[in-house]
Length: 339
Image 1: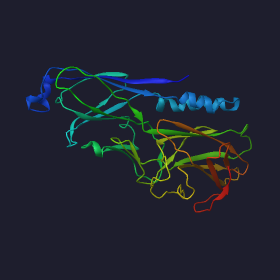
Image 2 (image 1 turned 180 degrees about the vertical axis):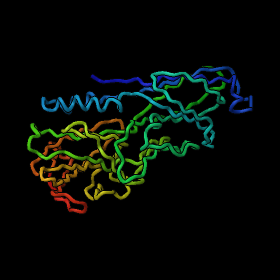
Image 3 (image 1 turned 120 degrees about the vertical axis):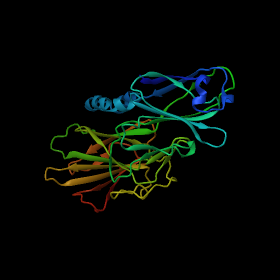
């Protein structure tokens, strides 16, 4: 069943009674008017997990993965950042408001001039050390920027954004529906072997090739820096990670990759680097190169088979390639395996 979450119902009253707080030109004042500002988030993560992990062996992974995913895909807003820009050609910030919500609804009274606005909103960045809001002064420059580090942990929140031109009439009431869309995405790697007894241990999973920025006003992901995001351990069979979306085309230029990962040389859109450890403590690195996009608002589940030599290969699908380095050490060459 489709799981729907309706996150925030914000009743924003824009009243001319206090418009002089923003603009002393009282010519902007007119009759009071009401704006119903409604934000809605929809997710289907439980459905995706149930469809992809349907066997008896995978059910325990599915249940645990749902619990892991719920904080990111529950439609909960911790914080809301709202910006209102002029639509007269100057593109200047007219009004900005930030609030900690932690609730499904809240009411605001905003004292802003009666004029036309480009409205941009961002949710869930306040407690996310991996994402910063930059370029607030103009709508064209407002963007989410990922921290520039060699390896980042999985993002601890899912980020949502919205944009809406707000044409305010000179008189009368009007309502606007503002829809928030997820800029984040998630990936889960799941080992599907019937038993893990006497097999190497899954130790580490890295996501490579996700975006490093997002321009809110035009909804464009940017790839200015290399991106390596470390997944979290869900259980012995599963690691999962939250990050920004990947490229949707190989025509988009990315920065040179880090940690011996080069998504350009195999024409993939993003990669998972998987590290396993054998009983003799040797490490095997498997690089899964994915040739379809990791899209915003989705969770991709990559099912793999773990082999006795420590390598992992895709359980099915021709859109994922694999290369393996046995007894891995930095700088080793890959051995290509079809899959």
